[in-house]
Length: 307
Ligand SMILES: NC(=O)c1ccc[n+]([C@@H]2O[C@H](COP(=O)([O-])OP(=O)(O)OC[C@H]3O[C@@H](n4cnc5c(N)ncnc54)[C@H](OP(=O)(O)O)[C@@H]3O)[C@@H](O)[C@H]2O)c1
Image 1 (cartoon, rainbow, N blue to C red):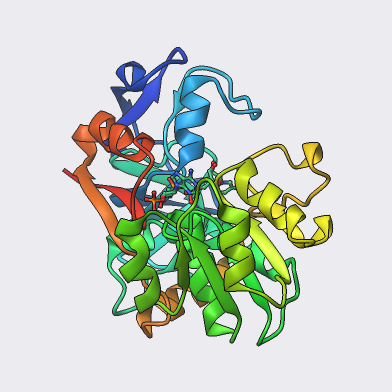
Image 2: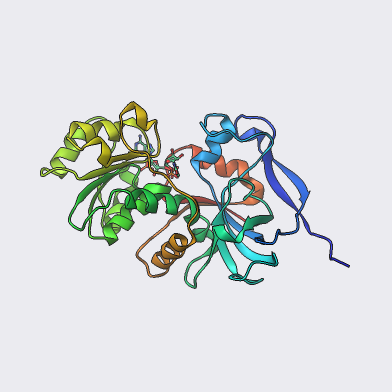
């Protein structure tokens, strides 16, 4: 007789709105398909897109009800018959379109990677969406050592990793952040400047010979400053605002790419990439976790952990 599938809680909403629409539902865990794994949730990374979708403010539309959460880490409890690269008991991390904030996560084996020794499950939970976005955006500009770039929201989930990935390639990184994050940015080899009024002048003075590329993670201000400094639109990338308004690029994360996840995790393990945990909440406090994220000022990632 096939053993009964376990049941578990999952975070869901049935209508768009604030954090009050987030609820827990008990649901049986589906048996993994041939190419899938069932992962016992250890941690989940929150992303602004989760909040935008919930509020009905995303251009992306998911039919209701929406099962919340994209990034996760945990331990494989079951695997499908065709899954050869992973075993029950492996600690893995990955990203799925929805449903990652649940006691059990069902995911294709093509969107996960192993958590290497030296990387915590909390940190791994923030790599598959924010980390790969940073990687893909940086790759799209084909920069060289010695180039000077501007990264906005440079202490945030994506910006924090993008800046460090660039530093590791010998690129000079000027990062915008509020004062409370400046010491951390310096400690990672990034030159901090405050965002806000006068940004163009501050960037001009920090990079008198010009800026090769700009990566925006927060909105128009950085794009406008980069254009004012003469950065060509094709060397400006935004993931936070409508790129067509400015004619700039909008390379975000492509399809989940496990070799990139492996590379990111290896960089965390060897200390090249520091991913601070801005705050950690138990899964049962998912509303508080989103309230923290949506307050907008943090360093690194906000994560949920198994209760
Ligand atoms: N297209 C894609 O593939 C993709 C993927 C991931 C994310 N995104 C989008 O990219 C954006 C960033 O995501 P994220 O996860 O990095 O966000 P996040 O971690 O929540 O960003 C937080 C950071 O924003 C900074 N910030 C707040 N106000 C700012 C301002 N006025 N100017 C500059 N920075 C400011 C904060 O800096 P201080 O704390 O220093 O104030 C904080 O470090 C979001 O809009 C998200 O939806 C797109």
